[in-house]
Image (cartoon, rainbow, N blue to C red; front, side, top):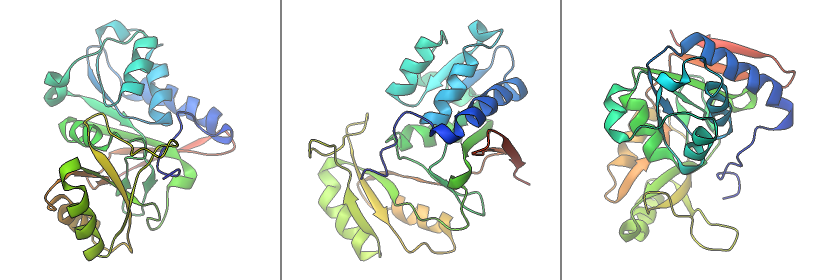
Length: 237
């Protein structure tokens, strides 16, 4: 789906605020010698660029969640670490496709949902930055669901039986989108129930589903980029 494949850029109206958020987030939360998780998407890329200006960046170890962010980190002169450092991650910076009124998130528009969720659960602290129009009262985006190729037809049927409307994510050339883990993605629309955490568990219990793009582990801090070049900060109570 075109909507579920994010381009690697922040819309022009939000660029100034995105840069300010990145600078502020690094200033507030990054300390010498930390292990940093790097989420995916355009807002995360802005934070990576800000990390490139951190005085003690040579002391940091960064764990990227996608090839795109890995390249961005290399271009910013950041030192990369492998997955062995995930249990020691001090903080992860990430974006979101949607954030609901209870701070649940839909993520995976860029296809890195599995690695993003692993890094989130390995981190001591999570910081989310997203454009203001992505903060909504109720989800409207389809949920990206990463599925092993052997299970794609089975998982599609199970999702339909549970009330979902799954669509295979495709490339412009009409080939299926394949994640960096070698799996497919079913972007699945739902009439969302009030209990998002229960839905997340139900989706992950379908055999062959590798990960679901519902993120119910909440961040401590949310930066909201505004179109006028400013931003708001909220902290999850």
